Image 1 (cartoon, rainbow, N blue to C red):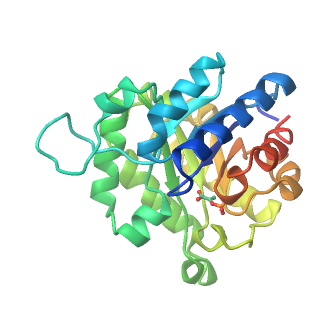
Image 2: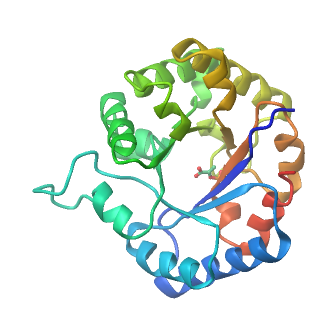
Image 3: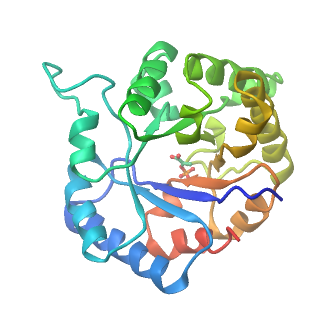
Amino acid sequence: MSDRRAFVAGNWKMNSDRAGAVALAEGVADLAKNEAWHCEVGIAPAFVHLDAVGRALRAKNSLVRLGAQDMYPGGNGAFTGEVSAAMLKDLGVDFVLVGHSERRHVIGEGEDVIAGKVRGVLDAGLTCVLCVGEKLDEREVGKTDAVNERQLRSALAGVSAGEAERVVIAYEPVWAIGTGKVASPADAQEAHAAVRGVLADIFDAGTAAGIRIQYGGSMKPGNAVELLAQGDIDGGLIGGAALEAESFAGICRGAE
Ligand code: PEP
């Protein structure tokens, strides 16, 4: 067991209306306070709900961290439709997801764009949750570790060991996201250990030992305990199961 404190974050994606997002945030904040989970907890609503959700968390003096699902890497200016770090910080955001598989494979963000976003998030003093993971065809030909390594090296090029304290990695096998298919605890652990090995090579062993590596991909209350018990799995990035406070709580309870 390591002494890394697990970080369980909900990625709410493009779901809910404002009232629903606030109610969900309040539900998570109440459960987190009443049950005193052992993990750090975060929620990442859609941009348009960040203000209302941030207010709801502050009204409850909640320790639940507020995250954004994306960010433009540059400062305020003529970038139609984009959202800057300054805007996010103004709303109380403290972590940002970068390189989620839906941004890579649905929106079409390339590795250079993702590297730029990692730099922008870190330059802004925010925490970067960098998502990596292989597609099914890549897994089937044994390329899981190679894909993760390529994505890690390109996104983290130029990141210092000091900055790495504000980096969290989310290993999310693409075939497991939103599909109900979940990596076995042993397979996930193997991939996480390989990710940590790459981090040790990019930074150093001590730095790598301190970086949290979340698992993401159909994590649910029923499979969370076994996944989170693995030595290199330090929390989860949760999609579907984060859209209901009680099921999200069921995962957070598993992070002892
Ligand atoms: C995700 O979107 O990051 C995710 C892991 O989704 P789900 O939990 O629904 O697979």
